Image (cartoon, rainbow, N blue to C red):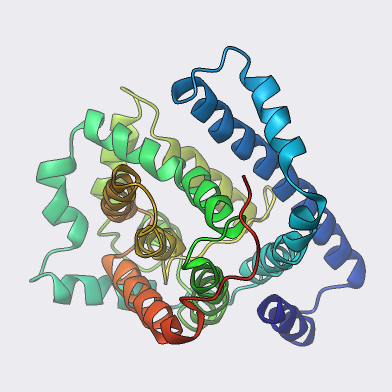
Length: 320
């Protein structure tokens, strides 16, 4: 709880945001997270009852699950939920107020230097440049939030050994990577390179390929990219654009690190998801490869840096 509060106080001092806007964001975040949590929890639990327990009435079984949770247990999770609402609210406020993009050319040049004179997407294109593969990568990238939030609930509302280590690393990742480093290395990403007026666009062929692939199967990333840029240009709702570092890759790796107590099949699924997120972040034009490399390094430093303090702490009883 102390981390999100410190994050909030820092945002109060640095971001010029009126109190009414803060209250609006808190309200929207609260309602959104409650709705998403309820939807995902019901979906996962319902699937479990149908596929594993062979329940004829999964909705009745879900209601029974809810009633079986002791009131004291539910209350004990309240601070975790409040902390997440604060974290989410401040993050989105911060993201929409990042400075002017000034690192894209440098990051692109660094990508080329690290990959022997070629850009990473050029290395991957002969293997991934087929619309069925692009479509699958786009689907995997699109479900990132659903996977991340379902995993967050499975760990946050449990007594798993690495619960506190995961929650603290998760919060620090969004604060340090999503706000501090995103501010220091403000960048838009390859998909927006051509919009920044930087001269010749080395990602023009990649974006042309993605638009052509979209004619065969929907490449969901293109619609999201259009919405983000319209918001940035003042023609829609501004949601914030940030390439360096990549929170998609950071959280995908974090889920792999924190999945040790899960079933082996889930562990392997998360590893595959992490690998596909990395490939998709480059192939779909979202990120430079160095965005992922920095995210991986920072996530590993945070995860192992706090391991001795949080790895074995258990603060709440387990939910049935």
